[in-house]
Image 1 (cartoon, rainbow, N blue to C red):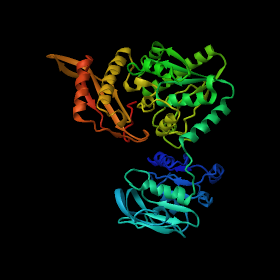
Image 2: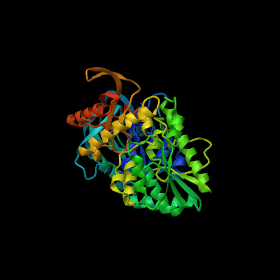
Image 3: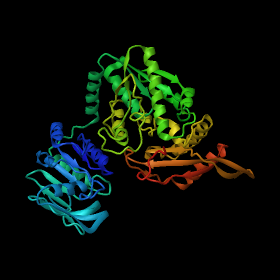
Image 4: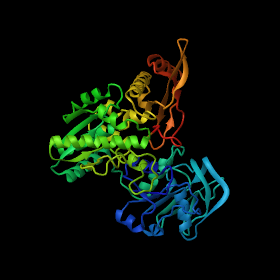
Length: 505
């Protein structure tokens, strides 16, 4: 199933919801031609929402021939308006009666099958479809929108003004399932077992009999990637754990201990000084990421030369990493260069193997469970490849690293003690590039502030700040300022994504 990305903030979420229904989906550019779409042979298409007006200069459009392919197509919000504008008989106007937030609609037709006629949905539009395309029937309306959905069974074209992919539309997933299964006839075959079988075959075909290195960080992404490749090629794989000195407290020892039980060849490289040297004097976050990514590759190339004829490097790149780094076809805007995507040197000698490149984080966890990975590793909170370097604003020094590492250890200890670790997507500390005045023991201090960042999310594409109990925040703050002499202030980040990102750099 292909999701045609028209610039909407929920485009990736649509793809995830489709996969949750066990139908494989991918994002494609709105610039793709009808012929390119036809060659992909999709079971169905979904046109995403988008922030633009269909009449705005430079607004995204699709090849009109796409609607003549005979592929069941669902337009959501902007996607519906684009269908109405491009198809004969349809009309879109700015009526002055936009809808933002929850709304009640009367939904009928095939998309509303097995649902009550009255539905609460999430709207976010200013333009409205005032006439459906010729041959289409109006199947939903709200108080402000006469045409909230239309269906043309003859051409398998469907449009809905609301967003079924968001949680604010309680029965939105059923609407999507009605489209996928009742209309498009898709098969719910996208399962962890199917993912493993497919990737094992792909890895074997790509690697052949060559030796393979895996850059192991200890996180769930690289761990699952390592086990997948090990399942495919066995002893041809050697995992290299690069301890770059940017990990959390005691993390290196935990990684070595855990993987010693997996039967995977593991090389532990201690490279603290090497990475700190590359980061000396560097404050720009993108430059940090690129230098760390490049140094990782140089370490792996050194190991490859030591091991002999190694030609491939395994990385735990995820679909969200690819999207946020600008996408594979330039559709998405670059939010940040992921170290696995935007931080690799152009002259890298090793060829990449990325078995998780088309998976979201929740799918990776399910694959990890299927592979028999220990629960404590499967559900480990995401930790960036550049580590604490991108949680230190400004230059990374040994002294600042130690300060942040100790603060983070206290935070993790208290979060686990409170039983909240699994409820949070991520919880971590940030060390800003400032100092603040304080008073301790009747003396003036000029110490670091520590920022607590805790969020809830499904896949990191969007996130909400976690409402930690005040007593817990107080306990964390008290321990940090009392146990770490360099810190005299603790603050809480209460910003969601968007507009912020989860990490500060």
